Length: 160
Image 1 (cartoon, rainbow, N blue to C red):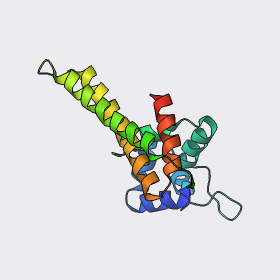
Image 2 (spheres, rainbow, N blue to C red; image 1 turned 180 degrees about the vertical axis):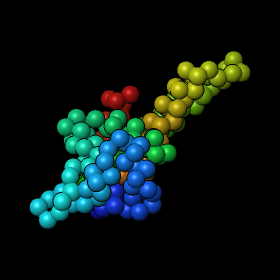
Image 3 (spheres, rainbow, N blue to C red; image 1 turned 135 degrees about the horizontal axis):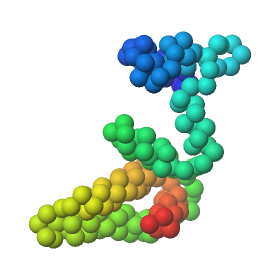
């Protein structure tokens, strides 16, 4: 689905007039966002296209992670293609280690029978990291990409 189609659908579910007013743009611009911006349409580059362009220029997953978090979800990249050679053990150890790190964050924070805002933020970071890692792990398993799991585990250790 193209970005203008997504916006067209979203505008059917809400008030384009309110969107324009809240964003401080003209109503006609909001309608143009919902049209193709190529030669066949009279649309213009829309905010979704701009966010995509920013992501493509920076390749910083934090942009997409932030947006997903604001929408009540989280971002997980799809795994690369499956390969035949694999070693499942390192990836399995890596996911167990992530769970252990999550449990450590919780038990450390709760050791004094209260959890501060900074401790809650630390727990949230560990939880979000675990969700991303576990989802990637499961996707690799579903695709039979155990070699990709090994690479995934090595990359995860580097990012930690």
